[in-house]
Picture 1 (cartoon, helix red, strand yellow):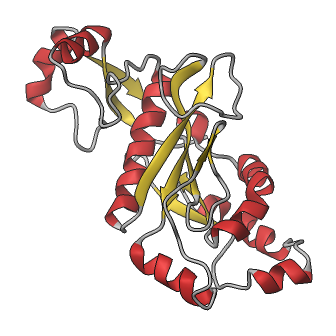
Picture 2 (picture 1 turned 90 degrees about the vertical axis):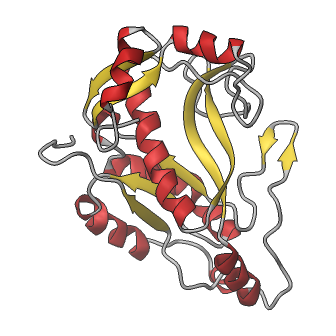
Length: 240
């Protein structure tokens, strides 16, 4: 819950009653469920769609990143994307995620990345590009977690604490997923507050494509390596 649509006046009793907590962040005033609110919802039998208690996020960075991710997802859901699963940070800060449920032993409530399924029209173009020999199917899972290089299931990264994903961060994510992009048949999705600040860098990435001719021929398609999702911060607030 973020400044463009919160906190609304009728939420202040919930803040004063310690059901919600308000944080002042780079993204504006941002609300999060407090532990008292979490206990109240759980006692009432209200759970997330996956059957888990609603998360109790703490700390400005964690809260603002969740709000920012939610706004990025809202844009993509309006385009027809669907959420397959969120991947959560392991305890101790390990960013190579193996668990897919918040609160599961060894995980935190911090979402690192989200696996999405492409819209129906995009799935149709993918099938056409493959001469209808390959189709987008529901996300598959292994004992270690979701398959993160499956056709039609790209990843979304979205963070705003510290100013958002830096050019160095974009480079690292691209090199981690550059082969996955071909398997997805879709660009890597990154939410950023100011696309113009990294557009030049992305053009240089396009020039640096190093995949072999055989691989390029196999995945010859008309999409960029990275798609930027523009999620601006409130006016007058600078990132970085």
